[in-house]
Length: 452
Ligand code: GLC
Image 1 (tube, rainbow, N blue to C red):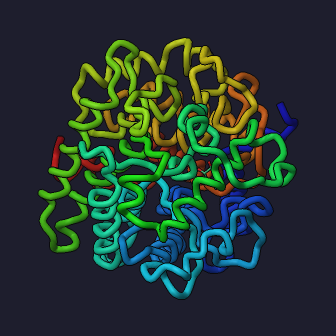
Image 2 (cartoon, protein in one colour):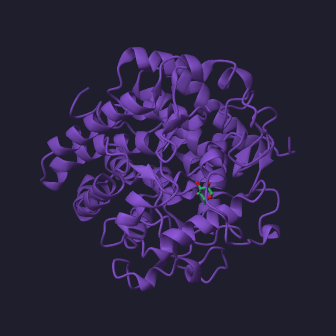
């Protein structure tokens, strides 16, 4: 454990805000200085959530800036290159400007990331101190969120069963997870030699070569939909990506009336995803969800923190919620680690307490599970998740991730989503203690105005 003076909640909140200020470029919050000098989609959604109560104006600017990079296909790219900072793979690899559907004024990657954005907008709307401005913002971004969801439904349902497939590990938000090991190992011969020394200690074997090669194949197809369906060698239905999508559909259903639209199509979309998750990814025997490799036609039986993300569904049947919570609290996950939640089952052969997405605990996945637990009425579980997460950042700082056994920091320092979500957890703790502003009703989309 790194030595760090104990800080009280107010000081912790101030530190979090100063990290977010330092990482603000004037148009976006970079995930961390140095290693991640651009705008990332998943990160910006978490930053929006974290700033929703602390600085709503900047939270709106963050999300609007990100959606400014949306492609005409509706795809929200996973990276927007808005600064001069060096990063590999950068604009010359993705070549977004060669594609007519990409925006002209900003270079982007050609991949996407989990569609958390509608939930982030819901957060902004729900916790708004100025409802009129928040509603205006909902009306402004609603069409873009619809386009994003339409893209997933029409272009990414590669399995034809109602789930969105990711076509690259970088789309998952859990880049080095062992879940991608077998689909990556099955790729055709790799034609790219990556300079491994750029990211020491991150990528086992030649995974990074495979990541880059996969991105190049998709790019060389012209980011073509038919190519994805027929020829692209990596297609995985991931429970975290789809659990987040479902939660965002529920959020859109609540935002629709604000935008003068019909909520029903979003509830129907959520129902389709719910059914497909249960039919295709649920593993009753193990009490959790597994990803499915569409190219191998088989589940990938590795339990990760993402296996619990479908809990974000506010309407999940009670028996399934109980089974998931039991596995989450077992000695495979929370019950084993002093600083939960480890990113994979600690009994898995691939578990590595210090390797990025192969063992460490993360603030963003803890936050997602905290939110899910609260929305299902598991108050104590939510409190444990919140307290453990705050303990991690209080002791080790706003690190990228943490050793699940001793809580020491791993990866980047001053990591934006760790700081941002700390602010949200602190705001919620103040609310619970009766010292914060009262929200309107409900604990999450699907439980508020529309009822469960
Ligand atoms: C890593 C993470 C991904 C995140 C990015 C920027 O690639 O796996 O989730 O968006 O870093 O922080």
